[in-house]
Length: 116
Image (cartoon, rainbow, N blue to C red; front, side, top):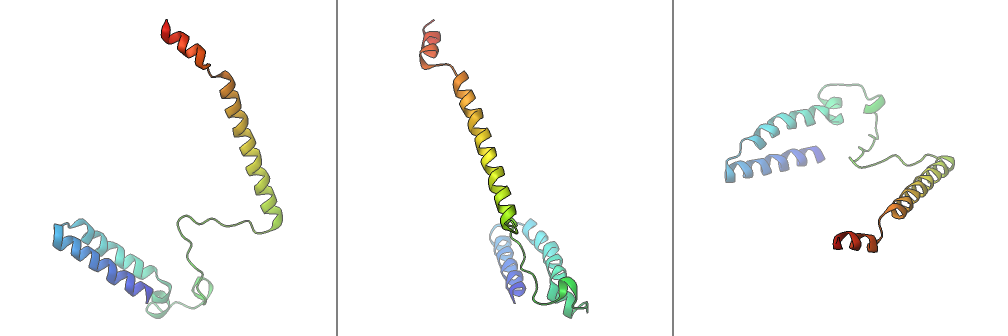
């Protein structure tokens, strides 16, 4: 049902864009991407292409990951290692900033150079 909604909404938006501004590229992209999306769908593969319901095609289907999702650490040890690595990185960056601040010219030196 979600795939059908996605296809209908995409076709509707592309149709409006083509009707209003006469753009052809969104229509071409929709003609290419829609069949690719449909053929990649697990239900389509099970029912139309008669694939066996094993592995990735067994139910419940795994939830698709979003583009910005990251796998969380699996156990407490990995979380602790990640926390330590993050803390070490933060300390290193802080030390670099402190070194840059030490080497930066003071306001009086900058004003003296402007006056000369």
